Image 1 (cartoon, each protein chain N blue to C red):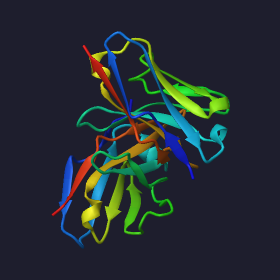
Image 2: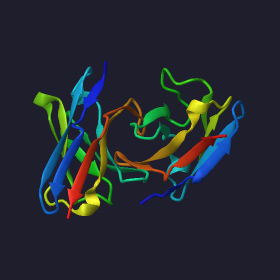
Image 3: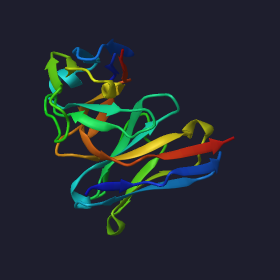
Image 4: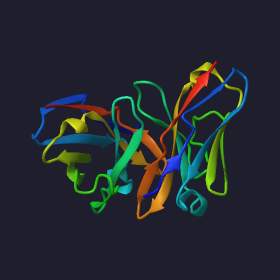
Length: 110
Length: 119
């Protein structure tokens, strides 16, 4: 079973850019271009912000972007805003329709 | 408008059975995989399993295989998550989510069902 490692917390000031990482222990992130990122505010359901490594659903600001290098995927948020403060979860495809979530990163906007 | 409607809360005792629902509307139910995701109190998201309503093909995370059952009723556009014998450790919020035109991106989510299991 895969394990996706995310830093527990990241912080940034309004207007800055931050990058959140997601590293795969198995070959899932490196093998497939099927990494997604979901944002979750406290007490709310998650919201998809990036899929297929780099694609952005309609309605998601272009301040959110995704990339991948080897076995690590990245979510970059530019022009940080207070409402970006949330938990962010990456997910990766493992084959046979099975998906795995990372442990999540708490983003604090200082 | 795509909606996934879930009951807000279920309270049960350990050893009891439970089935929670996720009623879909606003799209062709049979054409999108539905997943169930667990979130224990103060913890992260855990992918439990998924089902394709078109043919009821279901897949489970190894961590949840044999612990729960995922099913659908196409006539009701509803997916279900079922336990035969609950444990206190099953206390959590359970979300259903629709997979979009990708393999990992869940583009619509239910509001979650809080399951409380008392021992």
